[in-house]
Image 1 (cartoon, rainbow, N blue to C red):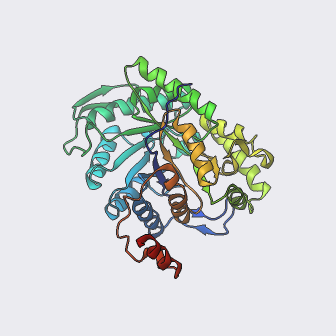
Image 2: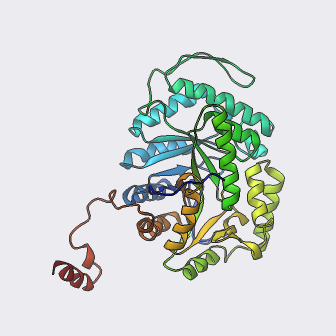
Image 3: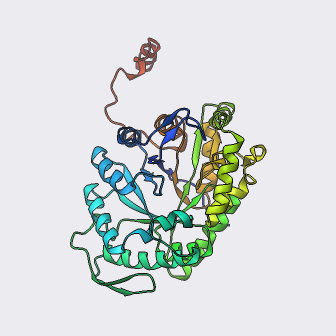
Length: 389
């Protein structure tokens, strides 16, 4: 296990729920549709609060992340946009042009999140009919062409899955040498692709020892190629002033979740997904058992009962959650891509409670006025007079 001593603050990203949001899992009660006005509120809150960026996912049940990012970027100032893409849905030349345009629109705030995909039925709807390992071979070719184009090369490539001749970009990106490439996947072919092409490798929130093994595997593969890779963690956060309040919030999140919904979701994951990462998520909670959801200290698998993909949350007080995050940071994790239900309110809760403990400062907040300490009551006046004296 490769470890380092955490020193710098973690870079904390948030999440834009383009498939919808809500206060409870597995029910329509409290559901919030993914209309643009709501997504704009979340993005602008994350920008104001000092999050480093936002992830916008992709999939059949998601509104398009690229169009969403292009619409949100001019409405924010500092927020970076980690935009998901499935490599087989478009040519690398076309995606490279989109990436360069979005990087210019956002003035260098674009990041691509390459998601090979693990649901063959859904992928077939996008015209992708490859088995698991062939999809990663296609991703490998895609990223070879994509990276070279953004680096300014004219590219000829005659591969098994991708053929281009004389491909080039006339309108370059802002970021040099190219906008960063982020990538996730847990299978051996995915780790190979990560080592060859990713600037940041993303892992879902598994117990620390399991995450350490994956990071070390990517490190070793990358080192053999003369490369280094940075690391990020995709996880949910449930932070409250005390551990007890946080666990109560976690239980509330699944309090309206019927057992039938859990069974249906787990059956769907088992039958439709060939994702190694999804199988690892399912094993954590025993395929849908409510009685074994704390799978490691403060690591809760309740979200994965009905949500595909990232299904774990860190639960606890700011001090507790910060301590758990530092354990991942000690493995080499630099960026946390967090989320919470509902995403607007939880963006504020996490920033107000967790940021100070993690050393994430308020520098991004602007317009703080002199009457702030007392604006909710008279006690603030006493605070200001005491400080002045």
